[in-house]
Image 1 (tube, rainbow, N blue to C red):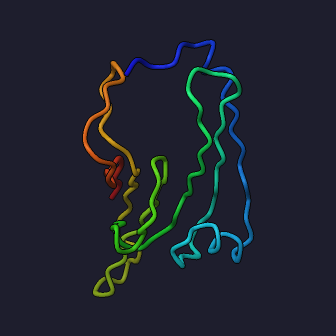
Image 2: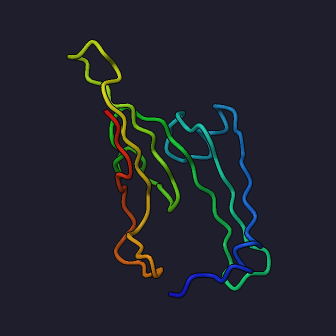
Length: 121
């Protein structure tokens, strides 16, 4: 699939939604109240019709389909690794994105899954 040209990129409209804790839980459809941001993405007259919403979660362990059963492409999990046996909690950090592998040429493959993108000690 070819990537959208630059002129269509300029027509993408993205909006940050700052939900209250109660509405964040309702928007997630999964019972999690740890959503810190919600984004709405739409195109206006571009070649591809995009009407999408994604969330940013804060967790203390890596995301799984059981923990976030309704993940959508673009969702992000900021994971502060907590180990009760250590006194320096959190002891590590990692960030995961819910996506498919994409090459530089825009070729998409596989099913969506949680991909670790960053780690820090």
